[in-house]
Image 1: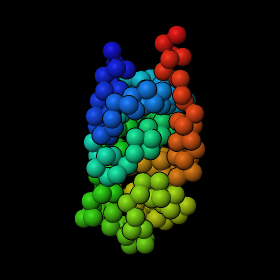
Image 2: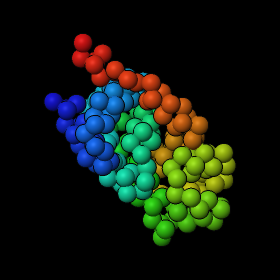
Image 3: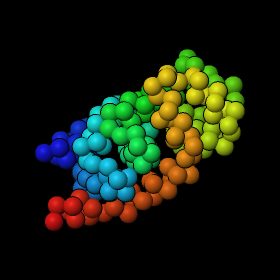
Image 4: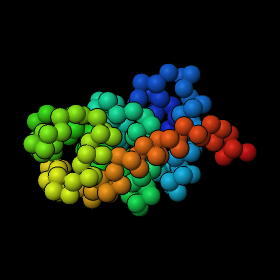
Length: 171
């Protein structure tokens, strides 16, 4: 099934052990429910974004929350995943134009949530940083910046309370 494949792929892509399977399954189901999207759409998003997320040091929970925030804004599946992939690649590439704009603004961290928080509070920085991203990623990442790191953290906190969500969905 899509859910089983997504679970196996997600564990693999984030380097998570099998003993995390129940928790990850619950978080995937909870993410889909809370974001008003489907597990299939999340699967497409994770498929595109997860390898770059892991490389950038972005956690499963942060990636799930970002996909959820984008889904709530109407950007789902492969479109959301591709935008996040570009963002994650650029935050981990010290030579990217995006990273250069962050460094000019004094943001030297590669931490996803910190970048969202710092950039979202500064409209000039948001504009400059977005110009450093490719055209296709800009609209989606602009939505994340408008939501800010606080919304990301709220959604991550929601994910912590999803124990049993996958079982409930199958009952």
